[in-house]
Length: 105
Image (cartoon, rainbow, N blue to C red; front, top):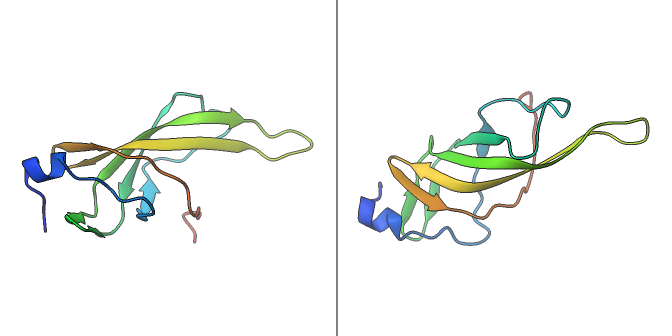
């Protein structure tokens, strides 16, 4: 099911909804910068009470923190996705990371 423009503009993504996504590019903690835009795509349809977020929809976000690796700890890159785009519609989203896998997983 696809959303009409009117319906999608009013959609809310319920808390706890899992969005299986893949980053559109790799992240390198040595080159990443705070504020850098990142994008990802939804890998499979996500059912919602009002319809479905279709596979291929895009998420946009930014890198919020970068800690480079040193002798005592590994690197850390924090990111936040805040906008979901499907077709020509944009929806504000609040996200939390639930799991992370490499491309090999």
